[in-house]
Image (cartoon, rainbow, N blue to C red; front, side, top):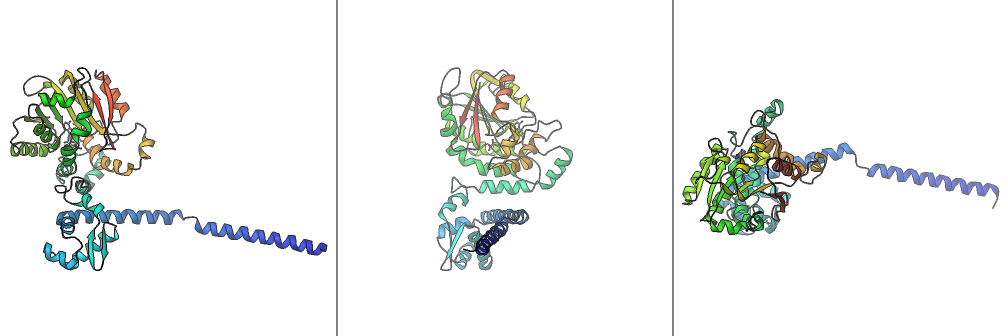
Length: 392
Ligand SMILES: C[S@@+](CC[C@H](N)C(=O)[O-])C[C@H]1O[C@@H](n2cnc3c(N)ncnc32)[C@H](O)[C@@H]1O
């Protein structure tokens, strides 16, 4: 090979390499996602999910999922006749539900996917229904103007904020859990630390119980029915909820429940028979309280020496970065801005804990400061976002 040829081969090899590198770089550049484009697509998805969630509420109000599930695969015309609704509108809303992955469409018929049916039917018919959660979301969105004002002033609104019936939505979300899981997943796992007695045995034998911040009273009514020898004091701060608990207790014909307005009766004053409480149950309340430390002080005074308190709260960290990194963090802080932080700042000087404000380290420290000597953490299988602290 002549020198010229060697040079030529080396040169063309070099050019080839450079061209290849250029092509690779170009194609890499093409494939690299544009952050602005990605952000735009992300926000489109967020808006799309919001529309889907709004239409899930619309379907719930129409009881459309129940009707579709009960009829099986149906044309819009068949459903329109069954539900006495507009065929044109049903076609549109079911097309949206199909595009959103909730329904399928084949041979001109719509069908609710079975794996969605038990999550979207009326909670009265489907114990694992998530409709209460969607109802909560819409009550929370009703609080937008209040949230704007709170962010400016620092002062939140409580559960009675007039525009929303948030307590009714929470009750719809949680009632089935109290009915089907409270005993098996929490009560059965608790032993009173001093006596070593099982909590369920104590409840069966008859003890004094305080159910703090029980909302519409689903937990109180469930326990009062199940343990008729025990007496229950249902403590609430919401005036709307207090009325509803009274109504429920009367409707169920329960004689072992006293409804207590926290503005009128303190926990430290003890049970309706004068003695102390043997069991205090606090489900998803402490992080909402304006004065959680005052509550813990009262709980210590009001709890019998052999009794125990069970606090169910959010399983979270005391480290903001860790909490933000949770896969459900946008939801957690969303609940907080519209509800938990709002309630815990609803009075001037309110503690302002918010949804992730009562992690284990804080719970241990604050209960220890009030003189509680025993602290145990229980996982709750059916509520992985929550945790139970047994305190005595
Ligand atoms: C998230 S809801 C939980 C309701 C119910 N325990 C449940 O899990 O379905 C919190 C409730 O705590 C009540 N609450 C807030 N501060 C309270 C206080 N200091 N004493 C009693 N109830 C309180 C609110 O009115 C609201 O009904």
